[in-house]
Image (cartoon, rainbow, N blue to C red):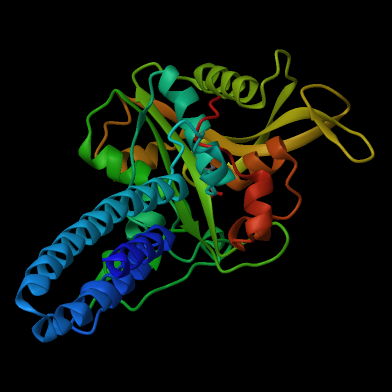
Length: 354
Ligand code: DAH
């Protein structure tokens, strides 16, 4: 009997020493398995006298039950410990701010377009868009560029193969060189009064510090019965004050030429240039920022609008140029290089608003 007591103590000790489920399973096999210590003792019962066998058999059965119970209790404790350790390791702190993980930024072009269209929206302009693959009619002819006119050459146009079987300027396809094309679509499809701004991509075959083959423009068009140059100037001055966030702004409208406007002008804004900085608002210098004018009567006629009854103004600006001036970005090409350091530096977080 003392044998059994000794074995019980030994087995209980090894159960308690098992520190994980796998070790505990080994202990179970070594005690109760086919070749286990308790099983081995069971096998000796046959050689005992009947009385002794009975007593020993009962004692061994009891031992088996006790050891099984010990193992079960230990297993429950170990499973609990394992679960606690897992919960500890896999904890997610749901109160952490997502900011450190927000790697993306809004591109300065996206931000500038949003700011510009928001300012025009406040003045009652709707936003319109149009196709980037255009025909010669919408890009040139309807806008009063006569066939062979030198102004066509100045656009460095990317031409596409002509529409098969097509004829005339509607069959000549190209990547639009300016957003003025959408003026034509709007006037063809909408009766005046018209008050729209048109953001979008434009394309020209040119590449240097101030030119890229793809760039963005924002076009404006307003047509009504009494719309005049004063309205045009008022809208554009308000735009520049709000966009550049200045209260006083010197402006100048210089005579210019565009086939689709008459008279045509270029708008300059005042600035002062320091050694390493450009301050917009006032000062001895001027910056050219956009082209504009009164819509040419030929354009109204080409788009099916009665030029005796209606008149209006139009303007077009380079979006990259507006962004470069506002944020001090020196080279246009960097906008499209997708350099992560540049994007982090000039990009905007989604939470920041105007
Ligand atoms: N389309 C012209 C360009 O790309 C810009 C422009 C000038 C647009 C005068 C206009 C405008 O609507 O009236 O150079």
